[in-house]
Length: 277
Image 1 (cartoon, helix red, strand yellow):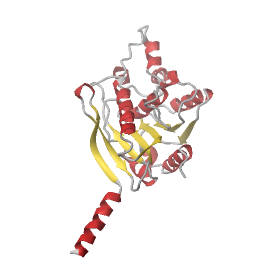
Image 2: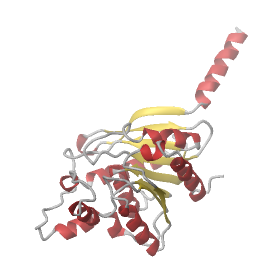
Image 3: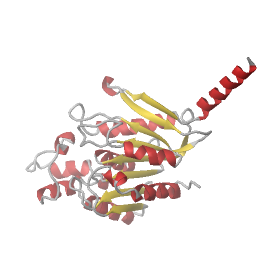
Image 4: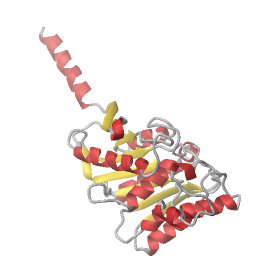
């Protein structure tokens, strides 16, 4: 009897101290649409540095378990808690609904920090492709309740006027971004104002959180120059903005899986920026 009780206690301790994965947690319900996230909580007492992950998909496809899974293992091994989120997609919703959903996720994670062992001073916003554009925008437009410690956009569009110019020059192909962001026709007098309104570069100012840009030089969907120009403007405003350039890398998470040194540099930057020993 005592032996059985001892074994049960050992099993309970093992279960309650190991890392946990929780799925399909509702964090917001805008207009009756349930938005969910998946959460990974490392083993230990915490609190842990935390990453909120935003998937790509051209603003029209994808979810919290598509495109971004290559980020899960390196973050987990480095001791980060992480949350991967859903957000509303076009045509179900249009900008700024998607950014509002990212901001809602930040607020939710902060509100539930104790339960999920989140270090409130070490929350990072990370996104790839469309998600990269969204985290960049949310990072520069933050309010006190949505401010984070760092922002990591992978191959995101930061300047939509530059994107339109690059399409006209044949450097990237067209996509549905104009519909998703309600951008008027080229001959519309409101075009320039709308492009400024939806671009992260417009809202760059001093005092922003540190940014780490990650981009491949052979990206055919989001031109590498997007990250180069954004870095210049961030640094000119007095902000920390580093860029990991991956020579020959195309668009997508192959930038992590095919170039493993990228994740090593990313984790090193996060630890240095967040002052993690």
